[in-house]
Every structure is written in structure tokens, then in C-alpha cells.
Amino acid sequence: MTFSLITGGAGFIGTNLARVLLERGFKVLVIDDLSLGRRDALPDVPDDGRLLFRQVDCADAEALGRAVMDAGIVVSEVWHLAANSDIPAGVEDPSVDLHRTFLTTFGVLKFMREFRVPSLRFASSSAIYGDHAGASLTETTGPWEPVSNYGAMKLASEAQIRAAVESWLQRADIFRFPNVVGIPATHGVILDFVRKLNRTPGVLDVLGDGAQCKPYIHVKDLVNAMLHITGQSGKYVVFNIGPADQGASVRLIAEAVRDHVSPDAEIRYGLGSKGWVGDVARVNYDISRLAATGWSSSRTSIEAVQQAVLDIAVQEARR
Image (cartoon, rainbow, N blue to C red):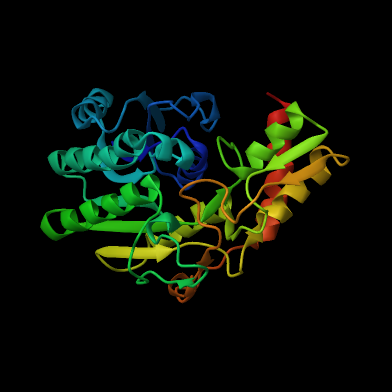
């Protein structure tokens, strides 16, 4: 049996991807160490062998290989989504991103080479570019100077994948994500704000002055874009993914959460344009290359944020 393997598949994006792949007739093996992901977030499908789960740290290539062999399947492609998604945690302890963001990539590639898996779909990030002070970011914008350990390890992962394509890997799709919102939310500014207001309904403290502005894409649009990109020609394919707009500000997000969760709360902003070390205050994402293939997001950044606020508030109310 031939399967698509998703690392980090019990996480926020992975569970949404798994659901769509299953709907399209694929068989899916989910690999997750459950450090952030939740097994109960996986799609609720009949127990007919089309969806398998194994708890494995994919930085361990041997353990990953054993999981595949024990399942008795053949893997035709890997969607590598496993990574540390907590940028401040990686700043505090760089070994977090080394292990969860880079060594997972190294382990996946080692496994793929041994098992002759031909195609890799990789979740990269706008964080690889660094802080270009709001200048338009195309796929070839340089120099690449990431300001977070997360961005540095994503860039190192891209480089490792490019070298693999040169020597043995048949195909690699590189997806450079903006901020992704939706459910099941495990991290991110909307979830943080909702949880803060649930704890202290009278006040919402915000890191930075609220002027930070970045593109936001709904996870359903993101999955649609990734699947669209895998249909494009080329051996090493790199795309920025995002909506065709200038983004949404932290101030707008804070007000949207406040208005929905606790309308009488006071919003207290901090000082400075950055929320934390490694943050990039303004991101201007150029998606011309993706738009030229005929793809576009169904939601603007603001619409994606508004929908995510509603959904995440419901998610947290059910906890």
C-alpha cells in the first residue's frame, strides 16, 4: 500500500492537510511526537486502514524507518511539517529549534534516502528572509538574514533539501508560509489573546505597540495552495504563499478578539515595534509567482483573522 506521510501531522496544519488528502482519496500515515499536536485532533474517519498514526520523533531517522516498516506500507511522498512553532522559546533555548526544526529535516531526508521516497513537500517560512523593513519579499529577495533561531533553522533546512535535490532527491516543493490562522489552534497571537481574556476579562496586555503588520492566511486556503503547488512543473519548486494584500495589524487583531470575547476589556499596548526578540514587525509578502499559476486566496488577511477569532473562541470555550 502506498501512503503519503505527514510529519507533525497531529498539529494545526497537519490535521487540516490530512483531512483534505483523505477526502481526495489518499492514504495517510501521520507521524508526530505529540509535543504540540493532539491525536484526538486527527480526522474522524472509518477504521479502514486509510489513516495510520505513529508517535515518533522524526529527528530519529531509524525510528521513522521502523514505524514505516512496522506499518507494512510504501511511502510515496513526505509532507514535512514538523517543527518548533514557538519562536520565543527558540530564542530562549536555541537547541529547541536545532532539534525540532533542523534535525527533524535532517532525519526525514536520511529516512527518505534509505527508503527511496522520491518527493518532499516542505513547510518553510517567511522568517528565512529576516527583517527587510517592510520591503517587498519575493522568492529571490536577499540577502537572507533570519533574525530568529526558527528562521535560521528553516533556512538551513531549505539548504539541506536543495543539496539533496542535487544528489538524489527527485522532487522538492518549498512552501514559504506567512502567519497561518484557524483551528485546531495550538499557538499564535489570536490564541494567546483569547486565553489572556479568558483569564483576565477586564484587560488585554499586548506585546509591542500594536502597529506590527503581517499577512495572515487561513489554514484551509494554505492547504489548498500547497496542493496546487505540487501540481506545478519543476524539480525544485519554491513559492511564497499568502493573500494578495498588505496584511493585518496586531492592533486590529487585539480589537477583534476583545470585541468578540470581552467587549468591555481595556487593551494595554507595550512599547516598541516588536513583540519579542526575533519578531519582524512588518512583512510585505510578494505572491506574484504563485498568482501567475492561477491560485488566489479565498480570504484576505483581515477576513482570515476574523474567521479565526470566531473559531478559536469556540475552541477555547469547549476546553
